[in-house]
Amino acid sequence: MLALLHVPALAATQIASARVWPAQEYTRLTLESDAPIAYNIFSVGTPARLVLDLEDVEFNATLEQLPAKISPADPYVSGVRIGRFRPGVVRLVLDLKTQVRPQVFVLKPIGEYRHRLVLDVYPLVEPVDPVMALLDKKESQPASAASPENSDKSEKAAASFSGRPAPAGKKAAPSFDVARLITVAIDAGHGGEDPGARGRSGTHEKHVTLAIARKLKALVDDEPNMRGILIRDGDYFIPLVNRVVKARKVQADLFVSIHADAYVKPHARGSSVFALSESGATSAAAGWLARKENEADLIGGVNIDVADPTLKQVLIDLSQTATINDSLKLAKSVLGEIGGFNDLHKAHVEQAGFAVLKAPDIPSILIETAFLTNPEEERKLKDDRYQDKMAQAILVGIRKYFSANPPLARSKLAQN
Image 1 (spheres, rainbow, N blue to C red):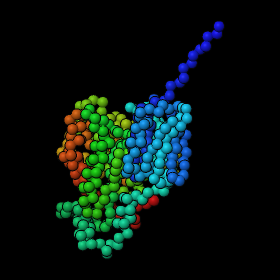
Image 2 (image 1 turned 120 degrees about the horizontal axis):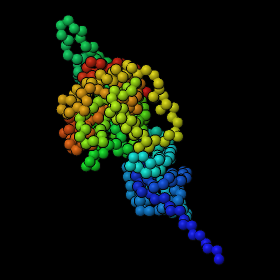
Image 3 (image 1 turned 135 degrees about the vertical axis):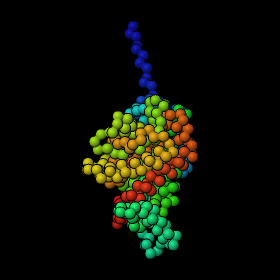
Image 4 (image 1 turned 45 degrees about the vertical axis):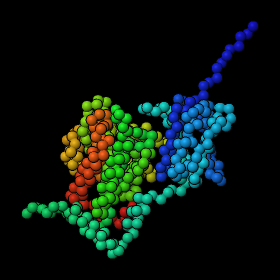
C-alpha cells in the first residue's frame, strides 16, 4: 500500500509591528514582518480610498489594532478598515480625506528592523508650505510700509551684524546694511522610522534633536530680521537629500543639523561640530560617524525607485571650496560657544562626508550635542536647562559668524 506523504502548508507571514507617521508632507504606514510581504495596491474613487491587499499574511492582533493608530489630525487618512478578503489575502482599505499619490515599497532588514512594507501617502496637490508662505509675505511687504517697530528691528539688525568698532589703524569689519530676512535652516536629525541613537534609559535621539531644534528656532525668531525654518517639525522621516532640498528651496543662509552622538563605549563624552570634507575625513572617528549618519536613509526608508530630477541636481559635483570655508568659520564660532558650558569631544572642528551637509551654496554644519550613550550626558540631553543652553550657544555662534560675514543681498528670498 502506498503511503501518502503529508506536506504541511507554508506558515502565513506574521506582522510584528504596524506604525503610522502622519505629517503635513505625507503620511507613512509601515508594516514590519518576519518575511517579505507580497502586495497589490489600487485606488477607488468617490469617496477616495486606497486598497492594499497583503498576500499570505496572518490576520493577527497587530493588524486588528492598526485602525486605532490613525490620528484624527492626520491630513490625508481618515481611517483604516482591515479584514480577510479571501483565503490567504488580508485587505486594508484606507479612507482618504483628499486625492492622494501613493508610493509603496519594501525594505530589507537593517539594524533592529525586520522586513518592512512601506506605504507613503502623498497629496495629489502639494500643500502650501507655511514657511514659504511666511517668506513670500515678508518679501512682498514694501520697505516704506514697515511699522516703526519693524524699522527699529531693522536698525538693530544692522547694528548687531556690524561688529565692534575697529582699533585705530585697523580696517573696520564690513557692516550689514542689507535689510532682508536672514534664513537659518534648522535640521532636527532623524525622525519617524529612524530613531537615531538610543540611550541606556531609552531616550531616542530623534526626540532630543527636535526639542533642541524647536528651542533654537524660537531664539532665532526673536532676533531682528532673522527667521528659523524647521526642516522637520514632528516625528516623521525625511530623507537626507530632501533636507538639503528644503533648505535650498527657501534659500537658507545657513544650515544647522542637530544630532546626539553614540559610541560603542559608554565613557565617550562631549560635544562636537562638523563641516563637510571634499577629501576624506579628518579622523577615523569622524569618518565612522559620517558613515553612521549617512545610513539614516537605509533605516528611515527611502523609495529608491522614484526618480526626481530636483533631487539629482542638489548634490551636483562642483567645487564647494568657498562654501566649505564659510562652513568652517561657522562651525568654529559655534564650537567656541558650546565649549563655554560643556565638555568638547574634540577642541577643533572636524570634517567628513556627511550627506546632509552637501548643499553646494549654503554654509552647513552638523552639531553632535553630546553622547546619548553616556549615561551622564543622556541625563543632560533630556534636561530642559541643558537644551536651552545648547540652543543659546548655537545662536550666539551664529550671530558672531554673521557679525564677521554679513549675508549678501539677493533679489528674492525663495526659489522654486
